[in-house]
Image (cartoon, rainbow, N blue to C red; front, side, top):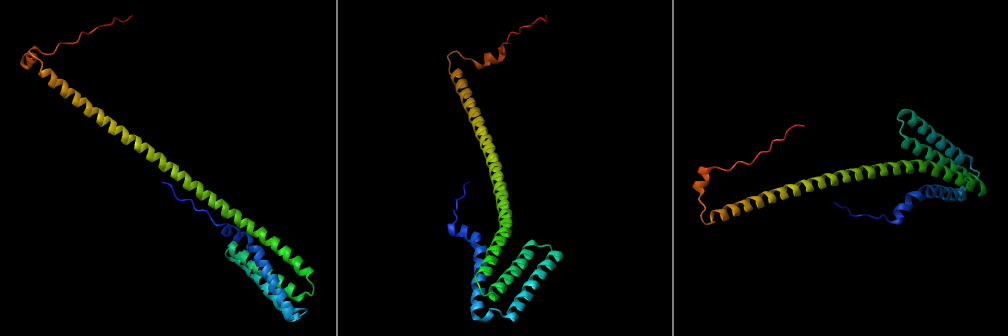
Length: 200
């Protein structure tokens, strides 16, 4: 059985790869908008972002200790890093420090995402291998059953052909002139000659 091949659109393939850069770029853009609207050199806003970032990091540590769920921990630390980036980008007056932090945050995000992408790729390859093995096993069983069925049909045809030939031979023999079945029954069938081999 063949299944249709579904080709993914290039945008569906590229979107997950661009997600970390889009996330950090969005945080940087929003932080710079916040900077232009009064967050520059605002100690209160910087303190708020510091507290939020520390809270997210603490939540990540607590989640790691309590559940060990790597996705939850990664999400909490990503939120912590995003809040720290937003706080610094909102507080700073120039673009050099926010851009530096954006590059670092993007690199770290890609480093973390690459681990999950590798795991997903391994899982997908393992599933494809398993499915391929099952398909080959079922195809082998199907081939064996087809051969067995064909053999049984051929044996049945051969038996039918033999029976038909025997019936035709008996009919033809009965139609021979001078054939007397009663004489054949009283005389019996002749015995085949036997040859005895002397052991050397």
